[in-house]
Length: 468
Ligand SMILES: [Zn+2]
Image 1 (tube, rainbow, N blue to C red):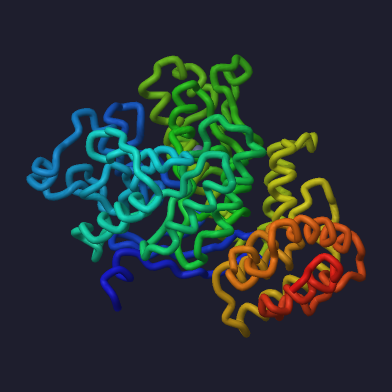
Image 2: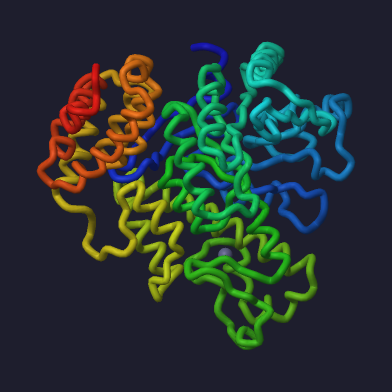
């Protein structure tokens, strides 16, 4: 066993046969984490957050230990004196932090990618510098080389690129050439349009390798968690559950309860009678209503519940993927959140891209698509498809023809033959052909090919436009 495998190993327990979701065991030196996982931000240096022991009680296995939030940021010497960050924080399970150096999982912050290069933020003093893509990768290489504890710590470089698909692809393709234990998807959840958000997430997970965890940074709304798990993300973090607790808001399957509201003044039920957290066991909505303005106590109690809600939600996601019932789970979840079926359009579109039709009531897709998926799963066992070829095949099976073409174009041999003008025509042709139910592209044989077969199929669909 290599030392790297010891710092982090990912075992895929199940892959959803409809979406890109997977359920994994991520083994870290301090704990085994079930994914998809929500990682609470446990340490804010004030009484507003949650104590590590409370998180432990909630069966939380990994949290963000952001040292910037410890008030006075301890230096490496102090941490060493304290016996390490885990001991300093009284947290013996896994830690993820973006401040570099002494953590379980360190994050390299690529602040911004422009035409000229990447604006890089030093994890140590926050200073920014401009690097060309080549230099950035060299820098990542140096970080990997300088990494002092690869046996028990992992570095996750961050896929950046803002909302520009080309830059994001470029960044992702560069990063996956490096041998690291996992990847983060960053630069999102900053108030961008949700339609842009999910497309960038999906594009990133399409490129990132299956055998490494994918951490989507700063995402924590329940709806976003469910959708992004379907898009193939494994790890999430967000201050939202504890922040919203400060405003008297409790997370429940139907959305949120604003405990400040008078309607709770004589409501003697717990926040959620299905919830197993200590707040729901011991306190009523009426009690919480009366103390909700007393921030520290109420905030504590609500934070415990809200984090319990997030952890439980992810456990349900994990379990439903393992049972291959994730699409059904998604539909039930959305109906609870939006009983009037006024689903947000971006969620409809994002889920549609992974074959889950929110607005269709039938238990699932038609027979043909199920056949294709079974074929795809079987073909995956039989063939040794790698990289863009595998992604192209998957996209084809999921009827995402444009994505398939984009992946195909990453393959050098295909690149040579498909010049850009031809690509455009093929796109149109493929779109036309796809609407025809008897088309070769819908044939169940499609899952068994090498890229050459796919290419041939594409050529057959538009023989007059390709001159190879
Ligand atoms: Zn609760």
